[in-house]
Amino acid sequence: MQYQAQCLVPGSASGELLFSDLELSFWGGVDLYTGRVVDHHHPLCGTALSGHVLAIPSGRGSCSGSGALLELLLSGLAPAALVFQQAEDILTLGVLVAKAVFEVSIPVVVLSHSEFRTLRGYKIAQIDGSRVVVSNEPVSLSPSLRQQPRAFPSVELSTREEEILQGIYGPATQVAMKILLSIAEIQGADKLLDVTQAHIDACIYTGPAGLRFAQHLVSLGAKFAIPTTLNAISLDYRRWKELGIAEETAQPAQRLADAYMAMGAKMSFTCAPYLLESVPKKDEQIGWAESNAVVFANSVLGARTQKYPDFLDVCIALTGRAPMSGCHRDADRLPRSIVMLPSLEGLDDSMYPVLGYLIGERVGPDVTLVCGLENAHPRIPDLKAFGAAFATTASAPMFHIRGITPESANVEHLASSLKHIIISNEDITACRQRLNTATDCSLGLVSLGNPHFSLEEFADLAGYCSQRRKHPKLKVIITTNRVIQEKAEKAGYLEVLASFGADIITDTCWCMLGEPVIPLDARNLMTNSAKYAHYAPGMVRRGVHFGSLAECVDAACTGEFVVKEEP
Image (cartoon, rainbow, N blue to C red; front, side):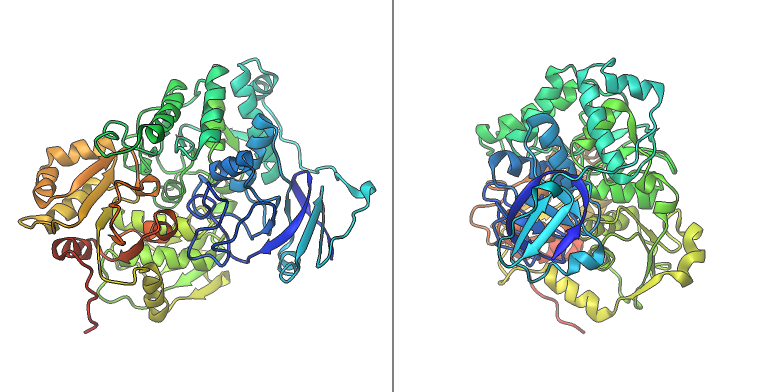
């Protein structure tokens, strides 16, 4: 079979075809030291990607997927080529950065939905420019058909943008503009727009390639053009020695954070920038990375950002510009589906992450309108948990919840024309069971704060822990940012938690923490985060007990997880 594809990154490659109709997050889903898929929820789990042509609908989950792919490219563990069902930014950006900065590249192409589905069952794929051939035996391609030219619309540039591209404002900003325009062309943007602030996810240390990228920009004199915050980094910047982190692990992570602060970023170190005083207003155009932060900003705050991959966030901060496409535009914020929930009795805080995870699976790349929570009165922590779980399984950058999120009333008139997705109580129960991957009731760690704990969550947790004490055989650890930690201390919540036996870690988050913070002898952990329940089995190789915040505290007190019997 032969196809004419949309070419996102030109090149030639051939190899065994790995096909899946499920999206894959390279961050947390692929081991960067082996190149094997470690996402226990993915059908390719255990498969080595190196040298294969990988065909997946798109990436999903973390914005750090671009950084993960860059590491694989520079270590020789990346796929030979990528074939998508739809134009994809996160993984494509990783290839573009590798090509622009390190002169390493692989071809990236897009097939139509119907063509992509026909790839299943073939053993070999060959790519040359925009031409894709799949077969069960090697096939020689005609040289005359190689390196088909790319055909993207040109981006109209302002005088200042032309000057940036010409290098008048320095080589770092020039490099950033070139990368930014490559993505803008892929997205079909006809111009760039001004953004008021940026949030950088590329400060997470994925490996030496990401550090080389940042240090290269610093050597070129890079300075951010707009207010910029930093995502949670890979360690507690102040306490890493106390926590037992090895110096060879800590030092490059610190150097990476230092590089971005040298460019002018604020030492915020949080995966929940929407909890900071710099929280953007409705309709404010921003350039944020970090998947849960993007979804929260678009959906709950009504601000406007695309789901920017690592490194593109840096380019936006350096130029103050972003492509006029995606959720920056009204049309791309409209729902394409409507999710109908069943009657939800006895709703507790664990229901929101379960629903976010399940709905994200069902809608994939589509913005959706969720119906059935109108009378549930979710709080900010509930919407935070819902959004983080949604961002884990969906590639969509936002959602609407009828009667709750700020733009839901604006899209209500579309409800009758949308694709209907019906979710049953049985679906919800099955999803909750999938998040519980532990095979026994043992417990070595209760991990809270993915995304970072808010002040409201500290208040709730202190209430559950008051006059109680955790079991001595396990750890209880909460991750948060420094601002919230200080507020929680002033409010008296940390004193209660210290008496309970809990510890607080700042600057980093559970997607970056491993041993010895996670006890070496712990077979299982417990969390109230569907996002961490998804990633932990592959990232830290522990079983997971998932439950509400109250259930996490109860389990911490008894030292084991006890399944509640249905009434």
